[in-house]
Image (cartoon, rainbow, N blue to C red; front, top):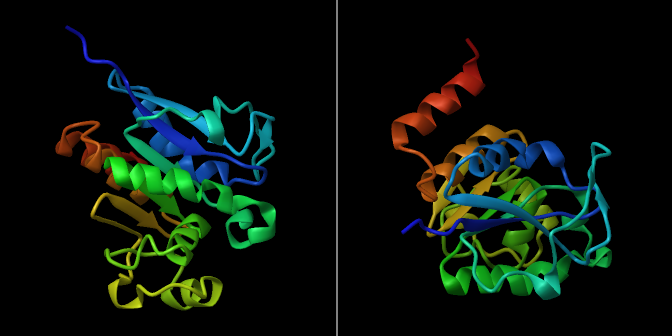
Length: 193
């Protein structure tokens, strides 16, 4: 009997950094095991930082009950509570409670830090100083790692220049491809022909 696809949710909002999730979304969506779907505060179309319009598959209030991963893609709204971005916190909590992978890149990693999700695991972001400045409630500085991307305890974090490294860690944690295939894919995209 064929296994059903596992859903990977990508959170989108007006101004999300489209390129930061493009590698991982494309690779996951090309497998038979995963289906990438977008979730947003509501069902209204969202426009990325690059001007690409996205019609969300789900609103926060009708997101699937179970999913394999929740990917939070960067953008400036993560640093502005007035933007309403905090509405995603319950979905992040639900992801953690059910053992789904949570990924945050660039300012989304800072958002995870601000809300306490990184206090007990190794993580990275857009420099420790930046995270401390932009996330006043952050208590995980002792676990900060100066690296492009870090995976620990089901959470993947990356700085804003690490879309490929973010993708590599998500692909590894989800067992989307054999390890050698992930590394080969990463090297090809990082170094070229």
